[in-house]
Image 1: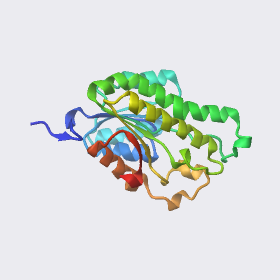
Image 2: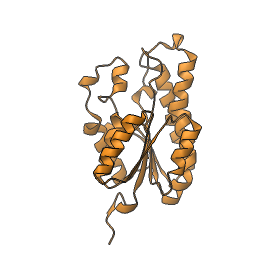
Image 3: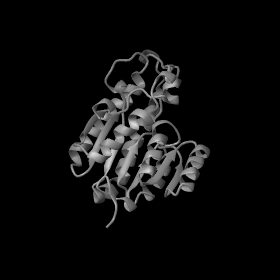
Image 4: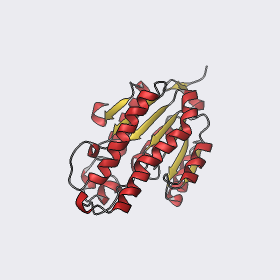
Amino acid sequence: MPVTRYGLNVEDMKALITGASRGLGLALARALAQDGWSLILDARGASDLEKIAADLAAAGVDVTALAGDIADPAHRETLVRASDGLDLLVNNASTLGATPLPRLAEYPSPELERAFAVNVLGPLALIQGVLPALRARRGAIVNVTSDAAREPYEGWGGYGATKAALDQLSNVLAAEEPEIAVWWVDPGEMRTRMLADAGEDADAAPLPEDVAVPALRRLLGERPASGRYAVGDL
């Protein structure tokens, strides 16, 4: 009898994770690899991504590394072509935007446009591309959001606006695609380069593998209703 996990045949589980070369994306990739998933990994940095993929492959993981920018239509098309039989899309790749974090009154438009391209438009276009595969498999989408989408943190207006837009896209997508699980997940503060780049004390924050990854594993295992979840909820 086939071994199952997450309600799926272990031999068939396939996930696409964007922003998988560091932070939460990397921690989740390693965790899903341990659980038997085949992986498609995306990140902008080719050398880091290829090293990670080589390490996973050496451990027996079926992994495909596709480096590129999620805001680039040609790169997204490459990801879509690799996504036959996809069960899970994790939209984790994102950019902080302008740094040091500016007040909205001084926010440079090119940097804000870039943030929306990476954090909102790119994920939506990728969702559109892989939806046929996810519909066929009754799969799931995880869109990584932030409490900055809801709270008025000074300096975080640009990034927070992109995550608020991603929240609402997820909310509507969940209503329009009832056969697919759509979860938008706030992982909370984590020890990541992005948090450090924002000028925060990243060393004081927990590692992604200690807080966010166990919560995401539980989400996949229990498959609750589509919705917004904070790590504390899980």
